[in-house]
Length: 299
Ligand code: UTP
Figure 1: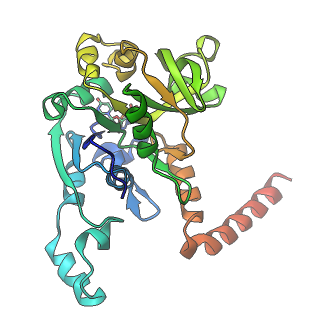
Figure 2 (figure 1 turned 90 degrees about the vertical axis):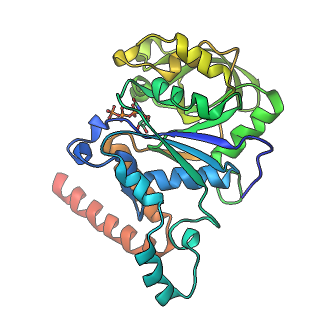
Figure 3 (figure 1 turned 90 degrees about the horizontal axis):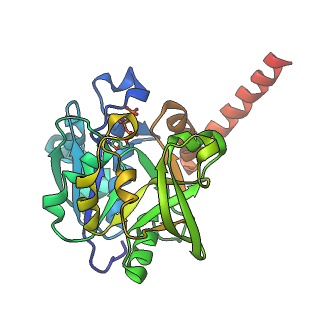
């Protein structure tokens, strides 16, 4: 685990309705959808802890109880497992962590948008800088590298400005992201002049989209207070970021999986399954057979 020199708090918004996932999300949170063998939000919490954040606030809502249950202790399971595996500690048995951090839950009663969800953490964050990690986005760092959030934190420590992780998105995907208008200021670092939520390709200022990882100074809360409902009638975090004093955009070397819709989820499953040694050969062989069948079907 890296130490992060000061920032301890991380806000994980996970209260959205997940309408793009219906009917799966009728009664279960999309943040609890499994990818390989753990729920999406577990990857997110593990990233936060690996990045040195030990004070975690999850924004939840109706039908999200299973998130709290997942991070709670389960004594029956622990007893059963300790019989089988010796005395592996709880944090290591279920999570890729030495210990489970303190997790606080705040309920968003009405799904008024991501900006509104982040604003609910204002009191808890006080005047401290904090990170926001979307609960439906996974980032995986290359072996031997720092997490996406740690890389952002390095930039925050150097410049003292809010940092938004961005990456190049294809034209057909511009309409799904907050897209920045920025100037390259240092390798992989952009000064953001503006940011537009889900623009049509013809008016997009670039193809650098925000990928769901942010570090903010407390200035963001004043900005969110000023935001009026925008795209989709929601309080958009993007509209608040536009009011910040020249935040920075950072392109990291991490791979990001957007679990916001069904194709994104399925692609994450496939790639992350292939990344696991115990499943790799079996699944690759199965995919090659499928591909052959598909080629025969279309020929
Ligand atoms: P999304 O806009 O992708 O989530 O928000 P959504 O609203 O659940 O999705 P659809 O469009 O209906 O399918 C990104 C993250 O922000 C959280 C979501 O839970 C997700 O993790 N979010 C969004 C909130 O916490 N509250 C909100 O009001 C909106």
